[in-house]
Image (tube, rainbow, N blue to C red; front, side, top):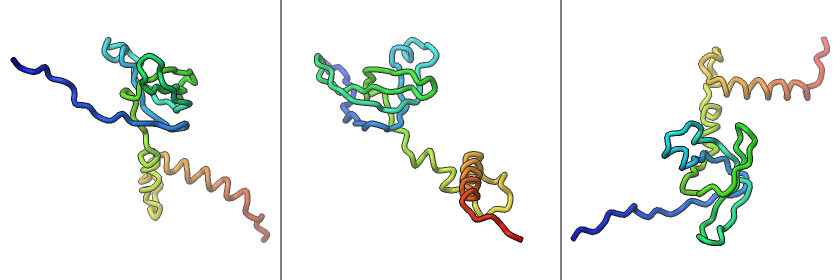
Length: 124
């Protein structure tokens, strides 16, 4: 008699308040419904009294909607390193800003405007 195949156990990740995560509504996903995956911010964690499993409450960033009881098996951390990669690797010595990703150009422009406001006025 063969043993039934089981899914390999893998440790569940833990998240902290303020983490930005990608999360999936598993029911919508398996039913093929749209809107099953979104980006959220972790607001709190809590333990379900019946299952003793840690669940998370999130804010869906695109809508501001509160999402309660999200299973961490359907969440993935979106690291700041990935979000900032284009700025960190921007070719700042290039004379053509077209060689830079748009996020890097936007970031530089924002900081140039802020820094210009703190500079003393030029006197001819």
